[in-house]
Image (cartoon, rainbow, N blue to C red; front, side, top):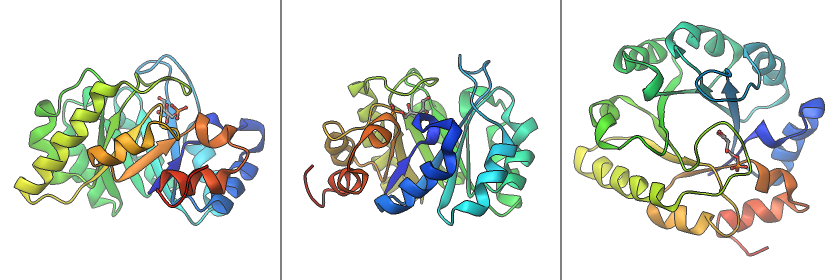
Length: 216
Ligand SMILES: O=C(CO)[C@H](O)[C@H](O)COP(=O)(O)O
């Protein structure tokens, strides 16, 4: 599946960004929430997500790049998140927060930055619907994929098989027409793409290309 990240959209025209995502055939909308503390950038909060919600029937994949995500989770659940994904590095009680998100009847996920190992989140794998592998240091779009991060996807595929778990593996950062095939070969289920998607003149062709349907 393809999840364009509106981080790279024109923030003065986000309805158009959603229309572009719908017309492209992409599957999800990826919404990057940054607090200026956990990552050195600020984006938007729950009101933005709430206001965008009526304009899209797509799955809203909300990626919290914030300190203390447990204190903020409710606001994003109320705003209309379908998946609420937080960083395990930012939450001591990740297991409790996963349970809480599930108790509110939405999907729950964790994300890991490039310096976090899969081994350090192994205990959480039975309790998640998605793991978002950051393939750049989070904070900004337009960076280059760190190839070593793809090995974490391979490890997560193996652990899912041996553990009988049921999570999706997403990859986020530096995904474009050149890198997508490596991420898919490693076992990624969801490709998040920001700058490559929004700078593409042929977004439907770009999405098809990432899905392996045709080349652009
Ligand atoms: O989470 C993010 C940055 O922290 C973005 O979703 C990600 O970087 C996508 O942007 P690009 O495809 O341009 O790398």
